Amino acid sequence: MRFGEVYERFQLGRLSCLEAADILGMSERTFLRYRCRYEADGADGLEDRRVGRVSGRRAPADVAAWVIELYARRYFDFNVKHFHEKLVAEHGHGLSYAWTKRVLQDAGQVKPMRRRGPHRRKRERKPLPGMMLHQDGSQHYWVPDVQWDLIVTMDDATSEIYSAFFVEEEGTMSSFQALTEVIGRHGLFGALYADRGSHYWITKAAGKGVDRETPTQVRRALDQLGITLIPASAPEARGRSERMFGTLQGRLPQELRSAGITTMAAANRYLGEVFLPAHNRRFQVPATEPDTAFVAYIGPDLKEVLCIQEDRVVGRDNCVAYRRLSLQLPPDRHRHHHVKARVRVHEYPDGRLSVLRGPRCLARYQADGSLTGEVENAKTAA
Image (cartoon, rainbow, N blue to C red):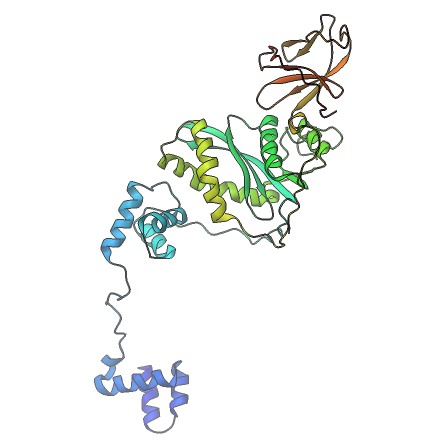
């Protein structure tokens, strides 16, 4: 009716072609096409001829059925993005992620995501790799019916994961293990951004700030290495690592299940050899500046720094008491005994121990306190 009214005014010469097209909200070319259809078929010619017709570009129904069946049978616990990557890489699927998501949502296989919260400004990345690293742990059912802690150390500038492994429980030793891996491969870095866990910081009262005057073993080791430890006050403050764990929780358990892995040893091998290289290729971003802030480590044996260090006094029987163990010092050709001497016990991430006096190692022990027979006089960390 609207078109008929404008068309009649156009025919009477009261409107130009441009004015009529502008009133109807279309171009002159479109108005010309509609005029021809109106003159040939009347009002029926104005109907949208696409209504009720299947698009020629629509994917065949059997393709959609195949995608739905494959997801339900093999990839039922994958998120849509991860599933689409598998379709492209392993099944030769050429249709878009948006199409895949819509098909799965229409079939009830996945639920639409809820609306995002209020907009927050993302903190800018560091310009160079090695300026600041994130370290955190995530407890999750990485394999069915078993919870492990995943310890991840990631670069702020590139989101590259330098170290990741599973442990039974996050703590001081897992931090030392991760730091040993990162520094051994890449060198010293500038700062470590971590939560306020008790192995990083001491908090004397709930809701209060961290105690910067009383260092933990991890902070003591980082101070020795010249690395700054930065406490995160809330999950939002370490959003980059939180988002990274969200990605890992949405992909890693599914990959472990697909590979048939159920043990921690096998999971750690798969993580280092297969998953992490592919993950870094997919999610690593280039740094804003083409250089590195990593510095080669030159100093005492790294294992003598990244370990628990506690002072003790040697007893009258030339034994050192340490955590329900009695560490017997062997005879020393340089002195008759070490009774009442102040020594330092080092406990390493693998559970082994050593007793040092100053820079000199007096003895090394297995985790059960038995002597290893190794006595090293090499310079170590004081």
